[in-house]
Length: 368
Image 1 (cartoon, helix red, strand yellow):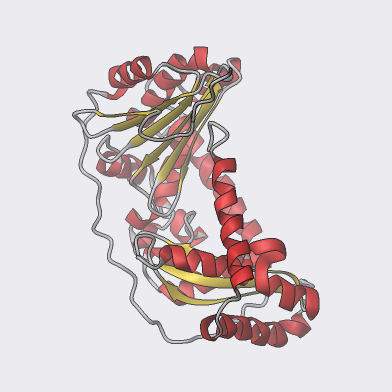
Image 2 (cartoon, rainbow, N blue to C red):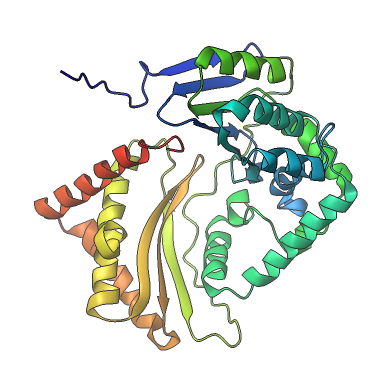
């Protein structure tokens, strides 16, 4: 008889260690393939950007791998690519994400590279200017994208001067004010093992991985996470923003209102409601009504954007410019129907089954 054991991540299969400097390590051994994945989170992001320098946190994250004490940009790429691995660091709203993947036998090398770029970036001027130019090109391309610009203008209208109101990459006028000294100062002020979490899954031995990380990062010290960002102002006045982009045949509509933070007790109930409204099947009720039945949109969906300090419940649609008003009315009607009419039992059960069915699929891989 073959005995099957439950190898899903959990207290029985995950080793958790916190180093004295505040760094938390989680390791799940999975020897089904000779590979390993590391995902890390630093509690520093766009919420820490000074207002005149929106995009600074992302700029710093994007330049960490461009040069460090022992790995200049060429050496970094040669080292990582020689073993067929990947190592990336990227900025987000509240966090900076770390992603490493490769063969298990190469993981000690990858940890050495990661530790050096995290702790000792040199911010070489030439490479930083390349990153700046690339980001400015991205901004230019974004300014011609109706869908992206609709979401940016929505966030600005909803959150105002709060960091949630600006994209993670900032704006051209803020990015151009960032100096090399700003990058180094931001790193010194915010990059720290305190609050850093590293999660490793793959064909590794937990004890060895913990020892390797402690060797590279155990003597690192730094300030505690900065959690001083205020919550967004509640209940902003209703506003309608129209931005015209020349030579476009499609209009993108984004509409919504303030919702809950991720830790709110109603979060999961709202997730189910959002699945019903604009996610399940061909994008829920919105997709069925606005897109399929009325033919008003090329796409239509909703999303619950619940973050640390607040959030928004948003509906978005891509429509013919002549259909904007009708699509807006139809979306409002679906929000109103969900708020005022009980959801049929079968529709609720189908949406819950869909959501729970996604969980085991996500846990089947090391990335999950």
